Length: 457
Image: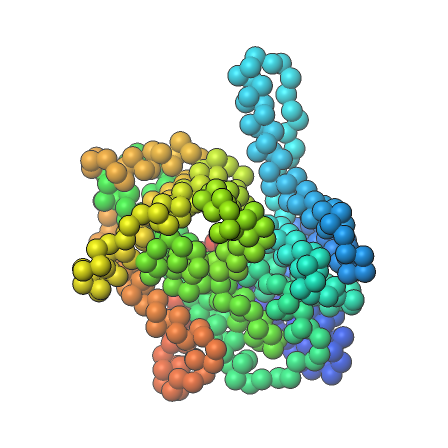
C-alpha cells in the first residue's frame, strides 16, 4: 500500500478519527497496531505472519535478556533476525555465485537456488529489532513488558517500510501514556505529509522517466546526455527518499508522535563524511553504533573499520556486486578523505566551500551509477559514457537542466519549513502559497503511481 494511493487514504482517515476519539490509551494503541497490520498486509498478506513472528520472538527475547543478560542470548536473538534477512535477501545471490564458482571449477554439482521474494521493509525492521536487542543487552533500555506497546514500536506503519529507523529509547517512551491532541503539531504534520507527497509525486516520479530512459540504454547517450540522466537520478533518489521520510514524520505527527528527520540537505555536504551525516541519518547512526564502534571505531584499525562498515552498508542496500562495490567505494573515499590534504587555506573561504560542495556532489553522483545500474557491467557501460568523449545521438531537454537546478536551489527553504513548527509559524498567505504549490505538483502528476525506491530494499 503506497502512501500516494487512495487505499492508504481510506485506511488513514478512519484510523485518525478512531484514534483521537477513543479515551483509552490501550485502545488507541490497538488502533495503531491494527492499522499497521492492515497497511503491511495490503501488499502481500502472508508476509504479515513473518512480521507477527518477528514481533513475538523479539518481545520474548528482550524480556529474557532483561532478566538474564547473556551474550549467548544476544547472539541467538541477533542471528535469528539476521538469518531471516539473509534468507530472503541474500540466499539467491550466494547460490548464484557459488554455482558460478562450481561451474568454473568444472563441477557438476549445483546449489539449489531459493525463489526470490523480498518482504517489504525487512531490511529496516530487522535493523530496528537488532538495535533493540543490543540496547537491552547493554542496559541502555529496559525490555518493553507490554506486548502491545512493543508491537506498535515494531510495526508503526509510517516508518515500517523504509524508516526512519527508530530506536527504542526514542520511541518507546512516547508509547507509555496517552498523547494529548496538539493542534499546532497536527497542523505541521499535515504540511509534512503534503510536502512529502509533493516531493515524491511532483519531483521524484517526474524525474524517474528521464533516469529510467538514460539507464535503460546508455549506448545511445552522449556524454552530456549521460550526465543529465545521472543528475536526474541523483535528484530523483533524494526527492523520493526525502519525500518518504518527510511523509513518515508528518503521519506520525498526526497521531501525536515524533520521528527523527532522516535528511539534512546532503547534497550541500563539503566532504563524504559530512554527506553521510546528512544522508539517511538514522541508518548512518545505526552502522556507526552497531558495527563501526564494535569493530574498534577510531581506536584501532580505523581505516579497515571504515572499509568494512561501508562495504556491509552497500550490501545491505542490495544483493549484488554493484551494491558491494558502491559501499566499498564510499569506504575508500572516507579513508582517503581522512588522509588527503585539504584545499589550500589561503584560498577564498567561499570559493573553497563551493568547490568542495561541487566535487563531493559529483563524486557521489558517480557512485550512484553503481547504485542505480542493474548490474556491474551496465554500470561500467554508463561510466564509459560519462567519462569518455561524446558519441551517440541522444539530445538533452534544456528545460530539464533548469528544472534540476531550481530544485537544488529550493532545497534549503523547503527544508526550513520541515523543522519543528516552522510551517505553522509562517504567515497565512505563505502557508496557502506553499500548500497550493505542493497540491498542484501532486495533482498534476498523480497518475504515475511509482513505488518508493526504498520499498524494494
